[in-house]
Length: 510
Image (tube, rainbow, N blue to C red):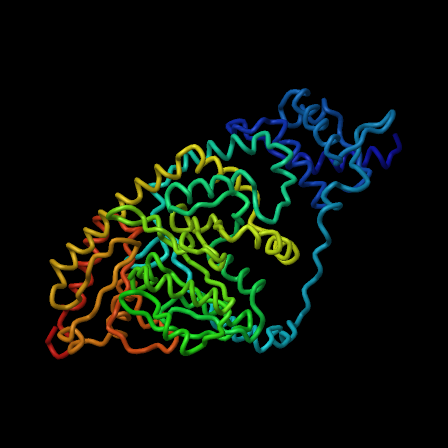
C-alpha cells in the first residue's frame, strides 16, 4: 500500500471517529454503523478510492466487536458503497449507489422569472370555476359528503387486503380489462339483483372511479358537443361542471313532488340526447320520482333516441320499508344507464363505483373507454369483491341504516326542541341529510346569508339550498348533513346554533 493510501486510510479513520453507536437503540449496531458510513460517502466526506481502516482498528476505536464492523462492511459492499480490492483494505466505491438514482440539484437562479400565462383555454378556465368545495379532514356539523367512518369494519378490510395481496394471483397483477375485475363485477351484479331488484349479470357491469366519473364517461362517449342534456333544476354543481367540460348544453327541467316534470323537459328541449335523474331520492330536495313520471321519461327516451343516467347515489339508505325498485328495472329499450357508487356506503377516498347498461352497449363502451381511461386501480377491486361476496357489505349496510336512522331522529328531536318556530324541518325516509327552512319569523331577524356566515364562524356549516340552483334563486332552505356526527355532537351543534340565533344583537334584541 502506498504512502498516499496510508494517509487516505488515516483520513478515513479521522472522519469515522465522528461516528457514534447508540447502545440503547433497538436498531442493531451494525445497521447504525453502515447507515452512518453510507451517509459519509453520499455526502462526499469519504471520496471514491479512499481505503477504509481495518475492522480491528475501527472496532477498537468504536469500542465494539469486529463482527459488528464486518457485518456493516459486508452490507455496504452488497449495496455498492464499498468494494474489496486484492491485497488491500476495503475502499470506497468509484461511484456511490445514490448517484445512480438522484440527479444533481441545480443551483436556483438569483431571480425568479415571471410565471407564464395560464395554460388553461377559455373552456378550461370556465371549467375551473366549478372547483368543488372539499370537506375538512374532520367532519363539522352539518357538513355534507362525510359518511360515518368509525363504524366501518377496517379490521375485516385489512384482512381481505392481506389475503389478496400477500401472494397475488397473476390474473390480478396483469388485469387490464377496461370493464373492471370480473369477480367484482359479478359481486356487484349479485348485490343489485338481491338488494335493488335490478336483474343483471357481470357482463352488464363496468367498474368506475365513482358516480361523477361514470357520468363524465357517459357524456364523453355518448354525446356530441352542442347536444342538449336534461338536468333536474336542483342538482349538484359538479354536474354542471361536467356538462361544461364536455361542451354540452344544460337544460334545467323543473321538479315537483313527483320528481322531474318530463312534459316540461319535452317542451324545452324535445331533442335532448340525455337526461340525468335521481329517481329514488332527488338530491337535494328528497322526493321520489313517481311511477307515472318514470314511464313518461322512458317513453321520451325511446322516442327521442336519448339516454337516461340514473344516479342512485344513496339508494341503500332507506329507513322504512324495502329499497325502491330502480328506474332501470322498468327499462325495456336499453335506454337507462344505472350509476352507483361506494363513496356513501364505504368511504369517499375509495373512489370506486359502477355502471350497469344494456349488454349490447358494453363492448363498444369499454373499447372506447380503454382508449381514454385506465382507472380505477385494481388494488381495491379484489378486496371489494370479497367484501361483497362474503356478506360483509350487506352486514355493514344494515348496521349503517340503524346508525343513520338514529342520527336523523336525534337531529329532528333537537331541532324541534331548540328551534321550533325558527327553522322548520321534516324527516326523510332516505338519505344522509335533511332540509330545513327558515321561517318568516327568523327571516325578519336575520337573512339566510348572515346566518350562514355567523354559523361558520362558530364552526357550523350550513349549506344554502340556493347553492343547488344554477340561477342561485332566493330560498330560505338549508341542507343539514348528519351522517358523520355522533349523537352528542348533533345535540351540541343544534344548541349552539340556537344560541347564535337567540344571541342579542347590537341593538339588544335577539
